[in-house]
Length: 126
Image (cartoon, rainbow, N blue to C red; front, top):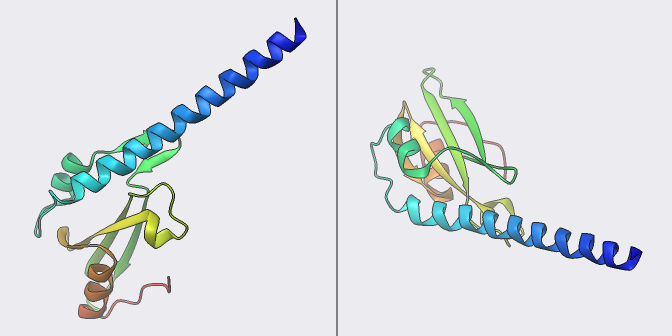
């Protein structure tokens, strides 16, 4: 009887963990598909309506946010979305959506670097 209970717990745990993996992959797939719908000049509200917000299996959407200011005290917001489950680096796992003064300035790591350079904003080394 104890072996049967132990087996039940092992199988249950594996099912739960595989379900978590599927949910995480679904978030990544949805985010990848949704980023192509983001357009330059969109507002944060428009981005939220396309990308969605919330938390599933411990993964927040957006995954994280950074805020920077240029020398004129203008706001640069970077929202990072989870797009790859099996990546080994943060750059492979996440895609940044860059907003300057509340409007989409670009999508992706190159856009982040270009926007930071354009407005002379220091962003941490990746």
